[in-house]
Image 1 (cartoon, rainbow, N blue to C red):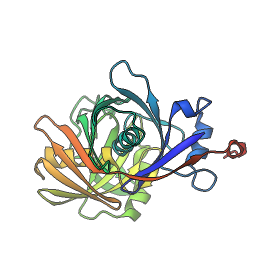
Image 2: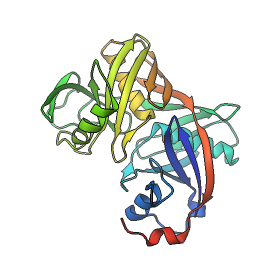
Image 3: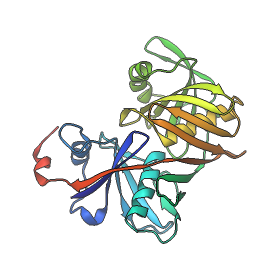
Length: 281
């Protein structure tokens, strides 16, 4: 089973092309491949490209816990770089189908930077989803581990809970993130961002990713947090998102169409041995 590994600001993914995989991946195999001691190690698997009726390519995205994600901003940038590196595209601008909706991607001439038009951000409880009456989920309260927090929720094809805070840290994110992810108000679980607004053009976030845990960066998390800052009129429409792994540039239109741009780094390629799958987690 051949693979390629990339990272986007420290958020790493393994790309598996279906033509190189002689099986349908099950959750146990996904968990093993992503495991950092018993497998190759990654924050997820990008399974594609496959045929799409709607777009140039189709992509499936798997989390390290074996679950499937609707969309991943960093994953889409990595997958776009993979398509370019392997000469699978005729034009540097192309479309990708995901379970969370289609996107348009563009790879820079040096292949290192990728821009993705991620679609419209919504704050509607019915779309995210969040339990309770139909509403835009803005500046609501949540009690977690004895802490009273203010949050907003959003979706860009996958669910996000943005916690507004004057102080963001990896320690707090690791402590509170797991409980927020599985809070009953989020029926599909949720990604979590702790966000501090630095000024009109910059925010800082720490991320707990649904199905993956603490991560150094996230494209869809950056978009969700930036969209919340813009919706609350705390920032302008062009926002730099600062994360432990680096920075992403987010551009929002008045109707919350989101464009994301940032670096992708190729790490390695190799072959997964069949012997690895004899291990059970």
